[in-house]
Amino acid sequence: MTHITLYDTTLRDGAQTQGVDFSVADKIAIASALDALGIDYIEGGWPGANPTDDAFFAQPPALAHARFTAFGMTKRHGRSAANDPALNALLNTTAPSICLVGKAWDYQVETALGLTKPENLALIDDSVRHSVTHNKQLIFDAEHFFDGYKSNPEYALECIKTAYQAGARWITLCDTNGGTLPFEIEEIVNAVIPHISGENLGIHCHNDTENAVANSLAAVKAGVRLVQGTLNGLGERCGNANLTAIIPTLMLKMGYTTSVSPQKLERLTHISRILDDRLNRPSNRHAAYVGEAAFAHKGGLHVSAVAKDPSSYEHINPDVVGNRRHVIVSDQSGRANILSRLHDIGMTVDATNPKIQELLETLKQREFEGYVYDGAEASFALLAQRHLLGVPEFYTLKSFRVVDERVSQANGTLQTLSQATVEVLVNGDTYTETATGNGPVNALDSALRRVLIPTFPALESVRLVDYKVRILTPNRGTEALTRVLIESRDTTTGDSWVTVGVSPNVIDASYTALQESIVYFLLGRK
Picture 1 (cartoon, rainbow, N blue to C red):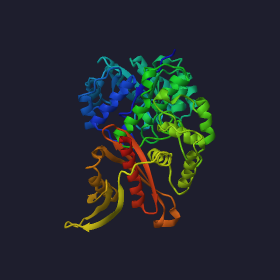
Picture 2: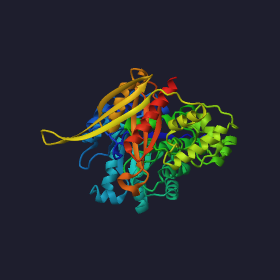
Picture 3: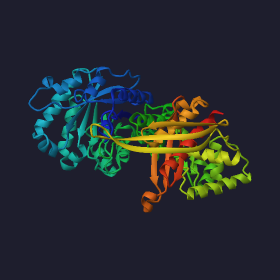
Picture 4: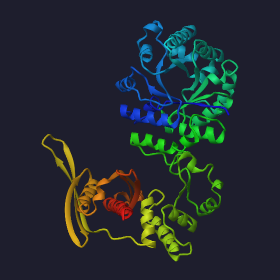
C-alpha cells in the first residue's frame, strides 16, 4: 500500500489564525499530542521571529516519532548563505529538519522581491546547498507555485528543480492564496511529476475557496506523497488544509497508509478537542469526523434506520476516529429517538411504557416554549429522569435576589458590582447567603455554593466553563424571551455537561440552567 507522509504546521500557520496566540506551554502540549498521533513532521515555528518561538526552540519537546522542523525563508539578496542571520538562526537550532520558503511565481519575484528571475534562482540554490551541509533535512516550500505555474510554467518548474537539485528532500507545492481548484491541482501536479518524482513532492493548501482538503486529496491522487496541514484547519484568512479530515479520508476512503495507526486514529477526536481546549475556544460541532454532530441523528425515521443498519446514515463507524453516535432529541423526535437517547444515558425502559409517550409530548411542548435539548444533554437526562424515575429534592430555593450596581470610583472610572442573595432549604433547614461576583450569574453561583457545599462538598470541583445567551423573540426588544446554555465541568474527572434555561428574564433563565447543572451533578453522585 502507498504511504503518505504527514507534515503538521499548526504551531506556525495555526498561530496566524485571528485570536490564536500560542504560549510555549501550548506549543509543547500540542507538539506532544501530534507526536503521539503519529505525525511525521512537526513544524515548530520560525526561530528568530519572536520570543515565543525562540524559547520553544531553545528547549524543544522530546518527540518519539516526529521530526521537529524549523521554518524560515531563503537568504536575502546581497548576502551569502553563510552570512545570513535569519538563515543561520534556523541552522543553529537542534531541529533535524528545516523548511525554507522561496518564491516560485515570477510576478512575486519581480514585484515583491524586486529581483530578476535568475537572481531568485540563485537565492534558492545557495540557501538549500548551504543548509544541507549542516546535516539538516531540507523541505522547500515553493510559495505561490500554482499561480506561478499558471503565469509562467517554465519558470515555476525551474524554481522547484533548482531546490531539488541543490539537495532538498521534499519540494512542497503551495497554493498560497487558496484560489486553485481541485481539477487544476491534479492537472498541474501531473505536469510536475515528469520533472520531480511524487516521492519527493508535497502539497500545501489554503482554504479560501473551501477546497483545501479536496485540493490536498487531488494532489495525492495525482502522485504527491507528503501532505501539509493543520489540526482543525487553523490558519490565516479561511484557514489551512484540515488534517483532522485529511488523515481519516486518506486511510479509510482512499486506501493509503500513514504513520497514524488504526489504534492511534481512535485518538483523533480527542486530540482535535485538546487543541480547542488549549485555545479556550469552542469546538466546531459540525466538523467532519471529529465534531460532536458528525454522527448525530435527529429525524425519527433516520434513527429507526440507524438502529437497524448504522451504515445507512453513517459513512464510517464513529468509534474508528474516537467519536460517538449521538441521537438528538427534539420536536422532530419519534419514539425511536427517545428510546435510543435513553439507552445512551444508561436508562433502560420498556418500549411499551406509556410514560415514553408522555415524555415525548412534554419534550415537544418545552421545545415549542424555547427549550432546546440537542445541545443540552444533561437537561434532557433530568427531564427523562423526572418523568420516568423521579429526581430527589436535594434542595429547594425559596427565593433569590440579584443586584447590579454601577459605582463611580475616586479615580473617575466606573465599576459595576454584582451581588446575589439566596434563601435555600436544605434537609429541613433554611439558609441565607450573600455573595458578590463577576456579573450576576457568577454572584448567584457563588451564593448557592456557600449554602450547598457544606452539605454537598463534591460541588467544590464543579466549574462553570461556558455561558451562552440567545434571544428567541428579538421583535420584542428588551422584553424578549431568552435561552441560556451553561456548560459545567468536574475538574476532578474532566467530565462536562450542558444545561438549559428559558425565561423572559435572563437571570431567571440563568438560574434554571445553573440549578439543573447542580442537580445533574448531584444525581450522578448518588
